[in-house]
Image (cartoon, rainbow, N blue to C red; front, side, top):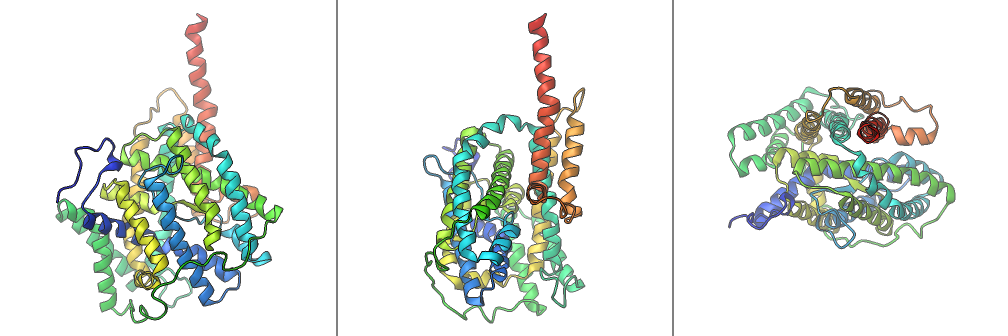
Length: 445
């Protein structure tokens, strides 16, 4: 069966045979699984929930992230960018939601998420209009920092994922990550065609088998517990709408809108397709709608996952239908906890070895974009240098903004949002005014 390329007007509309589509979709799920289950684990623990209730939060996160990915990749009128963008529970609001959960419980968290996401839905047209202020000098900085900001995640995975574990940072953990990385590199060097496109998935399977042989993976508990579990609406009670909580979450929503805008531009650059204001608006509306619906299913705000942008970059599989297949798998994981338990058995060092290549590919795509920038007789070098520096501050010194007001910490503690904000403002300050003054000279003379 041949892939259908002839009628494709855009790279993201390319279709593949079903087996390949779902295999590559599974690759997306494996890439982001660790990141998607971490927020509900953290928030559930802070709320004092038991293991069963935390498990409910995890399956809810998988289910709603799958629905969100399907909406974003397939799209309906006015909702969804129709780009290969994987959605998941965002880390950006974890700290704020932990504070709210500790003080008022999950109903206060869910009420704040619903209200703030609906407010975000109302302001998405504004964010869609600022696309003209994101030339390569801005997008290149943002894409680069997206990749760099994920490298600590890959390092933590390679060290074992759990700082309290006895084998944290052990040579065996890092060796397993290096082995997985080596398999990816070998498959890309020696493989051809479809082999290179499943290199990450194949390396994860091989790395997991090596971990089993070394006694570092255990699948004995896979069949313990329910096999099927339907979502329960408002399992923790009706949402509570508190004004202060809504305001604090609305700041997070602004960050999510900024990061999703950056993700949409990044994936557009990697895929090589046009991402205009209309497409960004549709993408942001899908983001905010699913974030508002998520609490109904006991989940949290959604945003684009940068990990999967890296997977698109390294595999060159640009089809949004592959991502939608990953969305279907996520929905299945949310309904079939047994499948989730299988994937959860993949050792963190294996994910870490894959993460090095995936996240580095995002940074490399940003560097490639920055190579297109004209650095002569303008302030672009200053814009790039300053934006990258601000983006690196939270990465190399996570506590840098801890003593600042909460709103400053919320906006700048993420290297992605800090880079986006600084590059955006400096480009307007230096280059937009400069271009405007140059254009006015011929008119005066």
